[in-house]
Length: 76
Image (cartoon, rainbow, N blue to C red; front, side, top):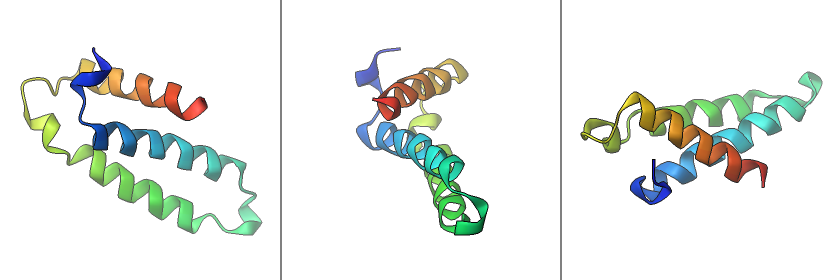
């Protein structure tokens, strides 16, 4: 899947999801994780509800391609 095929806001949301997830994993439970969890829920809703998934291009393979693209961006 071509990275340009995804709307930029969808890529940004998925990338932010991975970055937030890593922040949550790195935060000791005693320091409060509720804000990270709320952010993950917000981003999950934004990603899942994006109109892109209602198009012909919004296939399960596209979801995996988006995740791979965003994971790579989040790690760099």
